[in-house]
Length: 184
Image 1 (cartoon, rainbow, N blue to C red):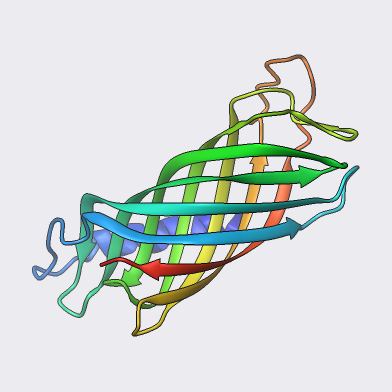
Image 2: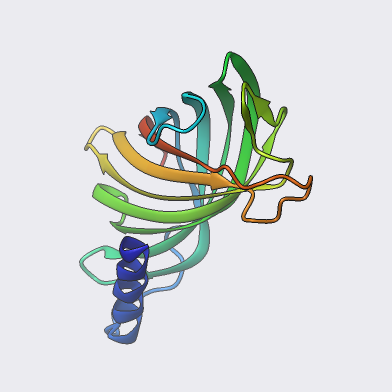
């Protein structure tokens, strides 16, 4: 939570002190495609791992300094497999994110939230209690000159306390590693 609060304050500070060289929407369009895989960050009743393919699309709202550094908005989509408790299900997600980077080069930090849909809700003794599920994540990516990128993100998925099917809110934390291709 402290990391998210720090990121929000950093973005607010950048917007509040934006020099006249900031521009509107050079970040719009397809940004990257890639694959991610990860393992449980915390042990609960079951051990989980997830694999997915994803794509990120740049939205028209961004703030960039003349140096190239700035904040951009993106929409991310992913589809993959979630495995735990001897069961495998399909997982799909869609949601917005903020990216702090230098116009698609070098290191990039991202923060986002997705709505997730699962093809199954029980994985062994773990029960995610129906759709929709919500996923929050923070991450870092390094983009090489040739367009390839490597990334790490920590993500948390839960039903957000809705418990639509009368159950609890078990949640799932994952460490995810990724490989991507920068499309720009």
